[in-house]
Image 1 (cartoon, rainbow, N blue to C red):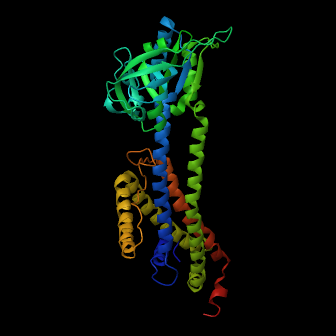
Image 2 (cartoon, helix red, strand yellow; image 1 turned 180 degrees about the horizontal axis):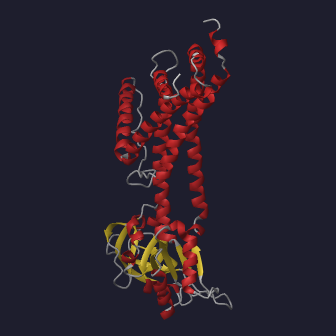
Image 3 (cartoon, rainbow, N blue to C red; image 1 turned 90 degrees about the vertical axis):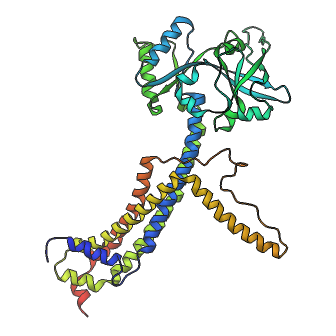
Length: 441
């Protein structure tokens, strides 16, 4: 027999195309296709939701790194400039934060976090600008006593653009002796913007005011923070090290306290990571089921083709060469199923809105037909179906985000599960002896 192994691919393709005996590989390809498609779309939607929440927290609330307290005067300005000059720093923004109660002119009160920012905050921090969508007005803090509130807060207090709102600051200062509390400061503010962040807690419980107004409301003992954004938020450890070096080249403590975004909402981020891991495992069980199916199908193929295997061995084919025929089958099945599933999964993930519209239309068509039939018998019908109802989910559109390394990992899961199943199933070939197989032929 020729030493060339081209005949291996020829025979494997013949087996896969069922030009002869053996089970059809269609169900195996369909199983790999379904698993890759489902896992790609599910993780894309999950990434869209999770990264939306995480980016809202990181870009609006916690920043990538916080420095506290930021000194006042020339020392603070010099520190901010040194940090902004670092190559890995995208922006550095001073801010104050305090608690307050807002009361509209018509009804209700609502507690809120008041973030004091410079008027040019959105020009300095483009990351935060990308997370805020303005339903009315703009980020206008040019005039004193200006305030920007969330859309849910405006709805709760029945407020509109240019309305006046009463703000009571809760930043009382405890005296060291007698625990005396300073009375809250009351001020009137004019609404210059109403924003939507996509994160319900911020849209209901956050407001932005001028940095100077926050200083007046917070009292003389309140400290100022510096919110730092990095070019890559995953380099927070390196960023804190570089910032410490530039602020205090001598290596001393220097009184600079730096906190990473990982320190804030740690439990929330951990819950999201665990949820994603469990979803990955549960949907990944599809590949285990499909792999077992391929394993059993290949074992059956080996048994049904004993005579052909014996003939190939008698002609001089080695154990390894004959085994590679069935491994090549697994390669074709895994590659075809994973490629088709990944291609369609990416198409659906990048067009997730129209896909769910078509899905809802198909389901509602079935519900409509059932309602018609139910009406003929005097029974009540069902309600319209919505995958992500705005009454339940705080979203305007379904988010979807593809992470490249996850897509590659999903493809490899589908491909390697078929390849591994074929490899283990073909192990029976090495135990066959040509004389035993062809004895009664």
